[in-house]
Length: 226
Ligand code: ADP
Ligand code: ADP
Image (cartoon, rainbow, N blue to C red; front, side, top):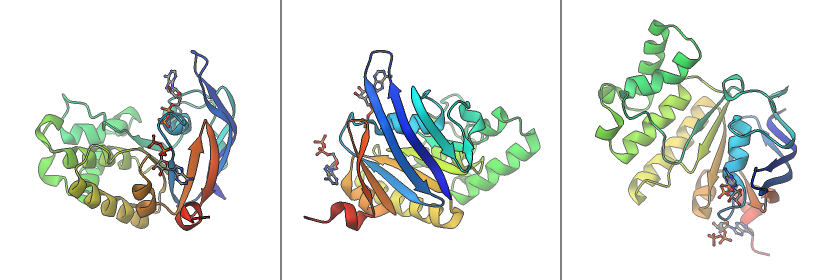
């Protein structure tokens, strides 16, 4: 069974830009899948359309066996981590992590317990009372991941979450992401324009171009020299 399937998925923005052009793609259960391609090819739009943050103009998105094309983000069992992390600056780490649970009407006690568990898994326990402005880039990235993980989503969507980290932290974060994916078995879709990142992390890679998939395969298949 595919974890995520896109069928003839099309997104035309109000300004007429066709960011996704009848795109077909299937991502397997538990896969760590990279979307690679030059700036403007539609990677972020695809991720946002899977998340329900953009409405498809045509075609469909399936998550598991459910067609979710017209469902709002909260009903899709996905969590997204943004490039700039998008943490709430006025909330503590604990409140940031618990926020999606609050939205989902999880009661206060379970929220606190889940937030604490997740923070512990990501090595954030000592930082729960801080605000994002008092954290390093790497710590903020972990809070963003923790916030996404706390709901135990079926699908994890990551939009260049490592691009704001320096080289050393990026390496650390890669190892960390890979371990999470192995341990939790969550299907992960990862946007990058960095070939080395895709190679280091992905089970399979789709190379996008002009709102379509140009090529899809394992890193070896995609990067094989002709
Ligand atoms: P830019 O010049 O904006 O970086 P590129 O066309 O060089 O855009 O490509 C962006 C990313 O896609 C790069 O990481 C590049 O290595 C990768 N890429 C381009 N063509 C291929 C290909 N045929 N197979 C795999 N990756 C590719
Ligand atoms: P990528 O993530 O690969 O850089 P995007 O999905 O951000 O690509 O963008 C794909 C195309 O859609 C680009 O031509 C971009 O300018 C356009 N685009 C993205 N977001 C919007 C928007 N909100 N309104 C209009 N056009 C957009």
